[in-house]
Length: 129
Image 1 (cartoon, one colour):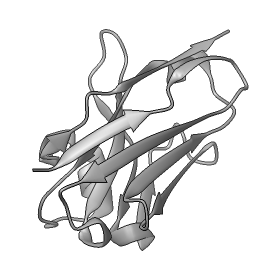
Image 2 (image 1 turned 45 degrees about the vertical axis):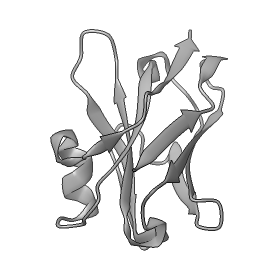
Image 3 (image 1 turned 90 degrees about the vertical axis):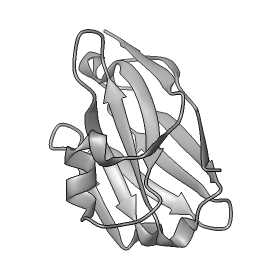
């Protein structure tokens, strides 16, 4: 059974940083696509950043490029999202998601949340102005 557990959310002032972690189990970590998605109140869930095959391919949404960095530690089956220069508009529940078989590109998975099969419960990030 695939399980994803997010951690690292919290309250931070604008300009601050947070690092989210997604601990994965029940999947072939080195041969997987894992992504970070977020959903703000009243908005649709959107892809933030995705990583495939332990880091051989990454994708960033335009709104977070140059501020966020996705990485993976294959020895810990964990994917991280380092978030710097946070803005109030980054406030959302952040979810980690994955698939059991890779059929598409990293870009596709990040742009199509419905293509992800397994989801964590999310962690709340609040950025105050």
